[in-house]
Length: 272
Image 1 (cartoon, rainbow, N blue to C red):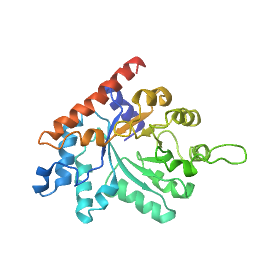
Image 2: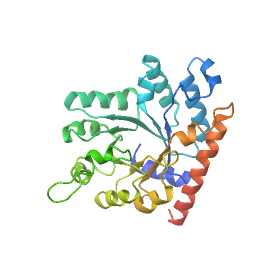
Image 3: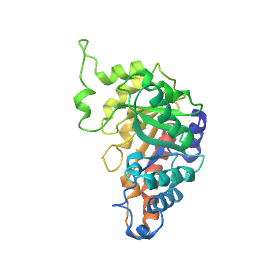
Image 4: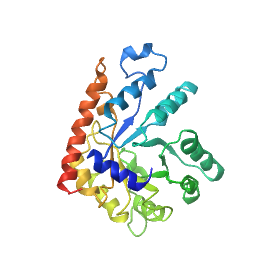
């Protein structure tokens, strides 16, 4: 998916919502456990209920890998089922060097045919560039995360007083462009989003943390907006686990619609 195609979807759907498919067998409705592939049946229902309200889906690969070969089969079926007008993001947080990164990239961009994959930048440029050799595919680098452990490294400073996450942003922004590189920026660090936006004004951000984690959509838009919207706001649990009853998909749609309507108001207010 190209940047232009993504922006067009945001305009048409009045949405910059990404639905996270963190599908847990212990949390999906019990009646689905009797089906041949409960994970896929759950995802299929969620996709059918929300595909007109969101512009992206983000399966968290760990939930599928934990199920072994059958989990990979469920993941492949899920990604194949996602409509082509929605971006598919493999939340895999890969990161290694040389041929290893190349084969990770082949896994997600060729075998699974995802549009994007999350990557950890800690090992540097040669761990990231193999992912960028695929046309119309995206690398989404971890930049400023919302977990408690982010304080262990991301905010440490050098002799000049500059935080590590800022150094990572400045360096990594030269590895790609706004057309193939995004950044993960947590919604619960709202003012940090503004700092990231100063360093990479034109890139898209994938923003987790709105919904169950308590991040504010209004703050994300306030601090992270750019001329092309520049935001993909992810919500997972608050949408997909809105209910565990037979009508779980319609309840998920209601939660997705609440966010989409808020986003539509933001887009309208910004004349986008």
